[in-house]
Image (cartoon, rainbow, N blue to C red):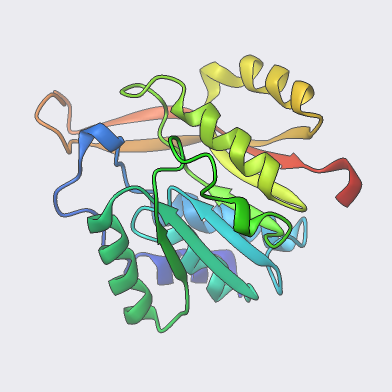
Length: 211
């Protein structure tokens, strides 16, 4: 499958009807989702026939993309029951199988215990941590601890140095695959502009033993 074909398919994913600012719910665009998963699959062989986890799965677009690219198993984790319901509806529409777990990963220390050793790759677009400070790093650390092979994640470019330092502390390789633009549409009352582009890094955290 070609990249443009994947992006075109993902355009049909439904997004949040009533996004919740306390969870920093901003939908991942088909453009970003397609590039993330296509790169993980074609360049690094981290998707096809692999067990994939999606932390903060939202409307399910990353999990759906992974499934379309031939993932062997998909499971998404989210704190919001409404988001999980939308994700499940999207999966039904696309006729893909994804398991979903309703959980607060930032508060439940044991939420991922039964998945340790069972997930090859984790993909995620975590909250940036503007409303809940540090939640992005909490989720990233849990992802790194859980994945057997690699973690793919989006983070503000302004936090790059901090994240590279943390990756070194955690004993994982961190590669900046690309700098991208995350389009934040006018979704909440406090948004003054129709949309804002935020510079984000598309990062791959690789386990040295899986290289």
